[in-house]
Length: 71
Image (cartoon, one colour):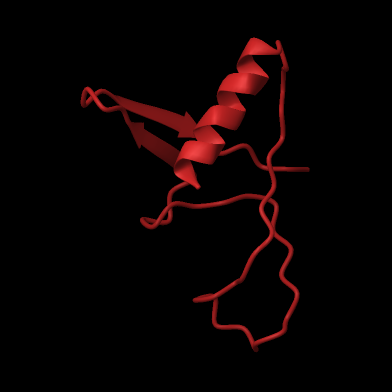
């Protein structure tokens, strides 16, 4: 999945797309809600509970991105 997303982002970049919004559909496991409950959020957090995404390149350089909250 990581390789797929990387390639999609490269295509969007080279196509000149601006302000692209990505959304995810999936489970809400670990939130403590009853199975089958629909959960709608307006943001995301990393495993430490912070609203950032950190990416480490193959050369060891770290990139940090802020999570954009949807209105």
